[in-house]
Amino acid sequence: MTVPLTLLGLLEREPSHGYDLKRDYDAYFGRGKPLSFGQVYSTLSRLARDGKVVISDPEPGEGPDRKRYVITELGATEVDSWLAQPVAPEPHLQTVLFAKVTLALMLGRDAETYLDAQRAAHLRRMRELTEIKRGGSLVDSLLADHGLFHLEADLRWIELTTARLGALAEQVHS
Amino acid sequence: MSILEARGVVLSFGETPALRGADLAVAEGELLAIMGPSGSGKSTLLHCLAGILVPDAGEVRFAGRRIDRLGETGRSALRRDEFGFVFQFGQLVPELSAQENVALPLLLSGVRRAAAVSEARTWFARLGLDGLEERRSGELSGGQAQRVALARGLVARPRVLFADEPTGALDSLTGEHVMDLLVGAAREQGTTVVLVTHEPRVAAYAGREVIVRDGKVHTLTAEAIA
Image (cartoon, rainbow over all chains, first blue to last red; front, side, top):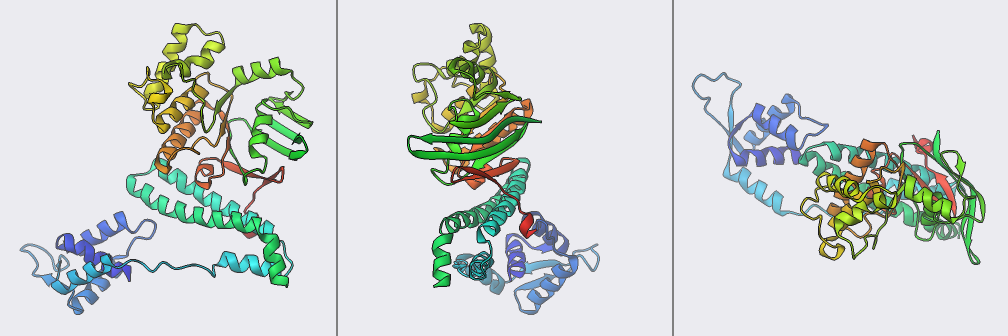
């Protein structure tokens, strides 16, 4: 759902061609996952069909594929309300991590070794993101930070759970 | 080859055991993070590796040489000549200017004052501390004081830098800046770094991490879930 809304948001800055929209999207939002041209144009077609953008007349001298897209009032309203809406703060209570630890204890497996391995995997990813931050642009750095803070939150949970494994084992076997 | 090694290190404070057979090898030029919960023994391990504490049993080697057998004078010389230190708090001498604080390890090693001060000054530009040379520690922000401490830890080009929670008293952004400088300077001069931290974001600057739990060192591996 965010691709159409992000493209709409980019169009609210100024009317743009599909090529420019893809370039800006990839630069800011598509790190490691750039949009295909097909996805850009099919999304723009749907937005046009729904009345959220209109296609302006091709400028003199421009080819047929140099259509300029302009956001409509309806599109701008949708961007406004999307930007004002907070993302649902999901509690993540049933994460894969939680399920693995609990099941390991239920099945008499070594949950601490699993948590240590998970901690190592998290830290390895954090090292990669830290290297990206150290050598990257501000945009790279902010994106890496987002990943780092989430991984750090998981790691804190892993630490706390490691310290409480005995109590959790008693509970799942009671 | 390991530059630092602990084998079966045991140390108790009175009746309370802190290390119960800790084993660790640190390669030359490596940046190692020692993590672990509060009271797990990670700082005690660092102090044993740095020759600050002497274990009750086990061996500690630096460059192949037993340092746990050295007397206080020998360990003191080792700390002065081979090691640098950065701690969390209160490490600058308040009566000295920032510049004199940085020059201190060189002066203690017998470098002439003019040369020591001149070398110390190069670190101010390097760590973004230009203009703060004459300030006392009370006139520096937390981040500035920690950068001065970092300069002091590295100015004598130690073979090993020991950093115990070096960003513990700093906010995230300032801590990040200090870590960037620490890693950059250590890599540039090939200094081995042993970093104690409980913060994963700080540990992520290291090339490898171990965890101390109940006085023993556990090496983490992600292989079990790879």
